[in-house]
Image 1 (cartoon, rainbow, N blue to C red):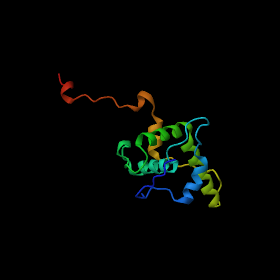
Image 2 (image 1 turned 180 degrees about the horizontal axis):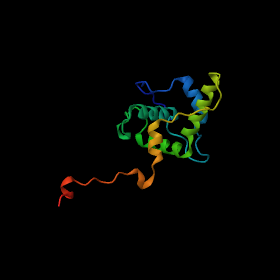
Image 3 (image 1 turned 135 degrees about the vertical axis):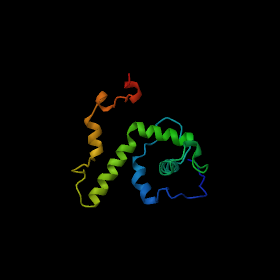
Image 4 (image 1 turned 45 degrees about the vertical axis):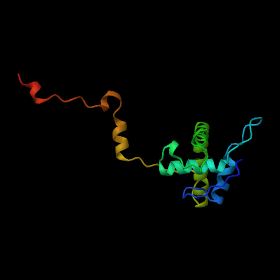
Length: 137
């Protein structure tokens, strides 16, 4: 892993206690492959920075790992379901710590969701209006 330390901390950087919750779920390098040359915590910090700020991949500050590396990990973990699994795990832990049931027992659907879901296919589109001039003979 890279021994470089960033000169600047960002508000989106994980605290040590937060990293301890996430680190066990980060996949280990594949056996027989090259050793990881990047600090995986810095990759996670870079991903959280991108998600919070909404910046483009290429505009990732230079004190993070290269954007191509961060993007590769993001895609791998997204496709493997890591982010969804991590979110589910943390939600369950948080609900348990609050004395609630692990899984939510209700969901909220607003009226706009229902209205747009009622119509489907061609019924959801509005036909074009003809101009008044086109009807005059």
